[in-house]
Image (cartoon, rainbow, N blue to C red):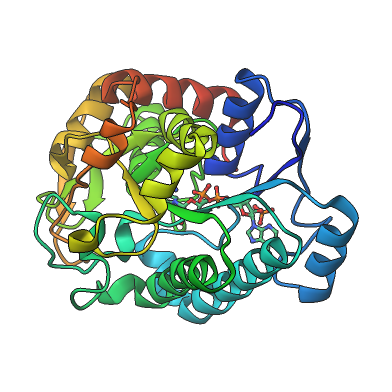
Length: 324
Ligand SMILES: NC(=O)c1ccc[n+]([C@@H]2O[C@H](COP(=O)([O-])OP(=O)(O)OC[C@H]3O[C@@H](n4cnc5c(N)ncnc54)[C@H](OP(=O)(O)O)[C@@H]3O)[C@@H](O)[C@H]2O)c1
């Protein structure tokens, strides 16, 4: 990527997209194109065609998606599969038709099989049944990855998928019904502290293990992938034969912790003095989900923000920006 190449970041106001824009700007890229959801509905094929025709971006980072936690995935399964299939299909197809040099599609660790061995390697995609609570979302995302792989093989595009684990950071979604576990816990603890509650209720048993990546670390990894010299990028696109899998790379922190440990860390940072109560009638989701990040590490990437430091930064952002 040259510094004045035109780079389209789809979903630039989201958690991942805003981090990508920050990272690109910090790295000196000056020609970043963005559109809000209102300006360009990516589920609208004609509108997306018009956008690519007029803007002709050199590179695309696709971070626009219908995203949510267990509750949102349970109650809006049709929205998750239909909107994500449409967004991806429109953007990936137009990127191919308009000769985009590199496209990075954001996948997610939650689309690997529910019970695959840990840590999860890239080659485990499609090797077993999916977690039922987010299957429509996962199938849409897997279709996007297959679309990139198929276009690479048939039309020689250079499209790649990045597979981050749970993200958190500035601009996160703190809606209690639609958010992910870490921002939801920040909000719950903060509100419990403000009200002077004696306890805070947490969904599930607290035993599932999760891995969390600060959004700016994820963005740093994505920009590194977009900047790789052609020969190194080729290796990422075409992994060795014995490891045959789509063009994807995991992005994880490298360590996980239980939801209980996470909650205890957040309690300390927020300063809530009450106790934790686990509502075991609520679903836990996948028991463990840690990514094998050796491929990304081999490319020279390491996360820079530790969990406690990242949560403190996210909490500051929550206090400053308020709830969205
Ligand atoms: N958050 C995580 O923990 C996590 C973990 C792994 C992977 N990822 C991946 O990262 C990507 C982005 O996730 P995120 O957490 O950043 O989500 P997010 O904060 O909800 O942001 C998603 C963005 O997409 C935009 N968008 C949604 N539908 C659109 C449409 N029809 N047309 C145009 N824009 C649309 C949203 O705009 P509006 O808000 O205006 O609708 C928003 O800016 C997803 O592919 C997700 O799978 C996220």
